[in-house]
Length: 102
Image (cartoon, rainbow, N blue to C red; front, side, top):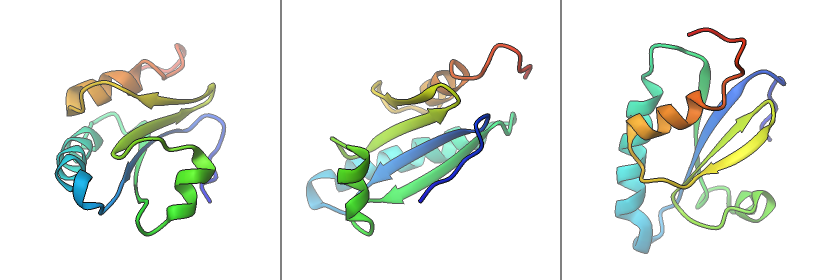
């Protein structure tokens, strides 16, 4: 189970090894890895393979694979845009509290 402090930001990529989504997951994994190389070090990045952890898909309500979910102090939000490293980073930056300077 994921435990985090109230001020930490987590970006989690949920993938699977299902044949129908394999190529989409590979592309998402590549872009997510690029996004994790940000120089700000304010976000924790994690990858969860739902094929290996199937109970998490039901427990967390994951409706599509691949899916990126951002957990932040105000809750969580699913990333529903085109998966690109730059867009993922912009989405995360929007979740940073205003009092944090980059």
